[in-house]
Image 1 (cartoon, rainbow, N blue to C red):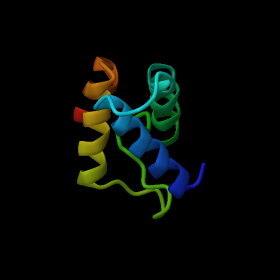
Image 2 (tube, rainbow, N blue to C red):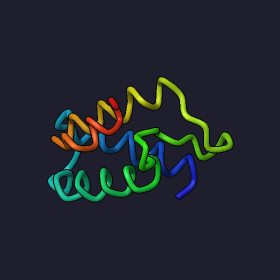
Image 3 (cartoon, rainbow, N blue to C red):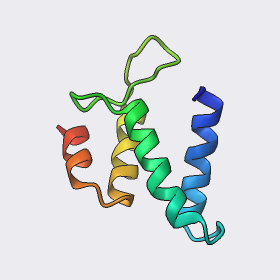
Image 4 (cartoon, rainbow, N blue to C red):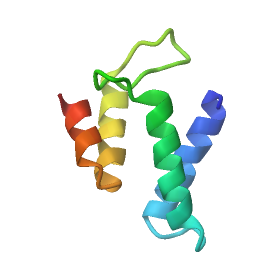
Length: 82
């Protein structure tokens, strides 16, 4: 998944979260969160910027924490908050 695809998935996820997406949103949400987490969340809780040498940013940490909360994923949230 390239950066543009990841951003589109994130945008679609956010649209689904606020209730403006189709009836497929719930299924997409689970798949999108799982895919996003698998790609960007490292084992030490950092949100990885894979387009910039694997570094992390405070903005990414905040976005990851927001998505974890929205998906009721307490363990991911605590890992990111870490």
